Length: 143
Image 1: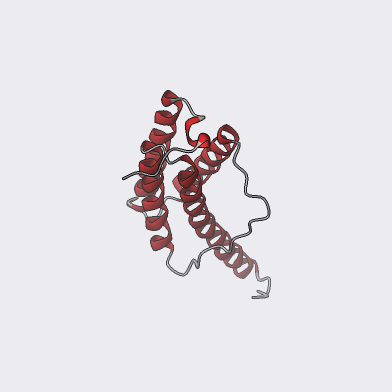
Image 2: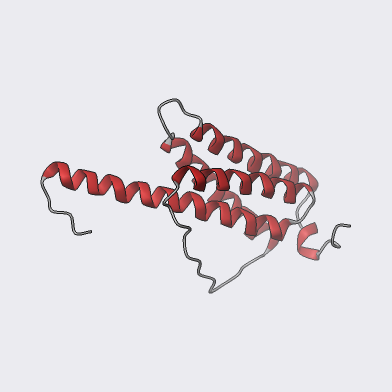
């Protein structure tokens, strides 16, 4: 049995809720497409999914009047980049299901987890590219 709806969960109109659900599903598909790119992981698609997830979180936080100030999280370990992206995809699809069930607050939290996985992947990718550029220019690496 589903938990009773909270006041914040019903602040969003049905048409908007369906649009947000479709957007979360689309973001999950974008991550899946990034993983299945023939030339390795499509970083542009990952960036687009990250930006879309950030936007969806911001819109939902605003629409729900939902804030969690002072909450800091550690980014997930990026030693398995494909695993991070697969987990982010699963979380985006889970958020779509939560939106479908009108569990709006839970969806925001799930979207945040997906965003953190995408951010961790992109941060690690940027660090690796920076190190590679330093090596090619002959600048000593500090790490």
